[in-house]
Length: 101
Image (cartoon, rainbow, N blue to C red; front, side, top):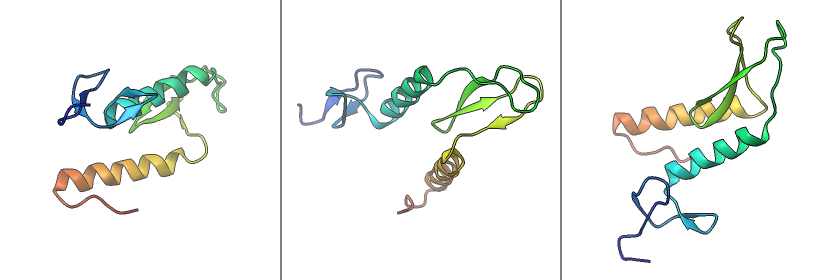
């Protein structure tokens, strides 16, 4: 490893972190984990109208959205994760220190 870190295998940014034994920055690690989870997760139907839900990513979380009724469906713990990510993004954007929790 170089003094400045290796290049991320996905984006080329310098990093000292690894993911699956390859140099990977934190942002790319999150993207890769979400992509893996999405590949494993099967198609679901909307509980309201039965339409096939479409998957989208919001703050690193896979969210199921209904294209007809516009409902949004989250799995257990996902709302808390989205809330935590939004608070961290707002905190960092405002210039304050990152929250401890």
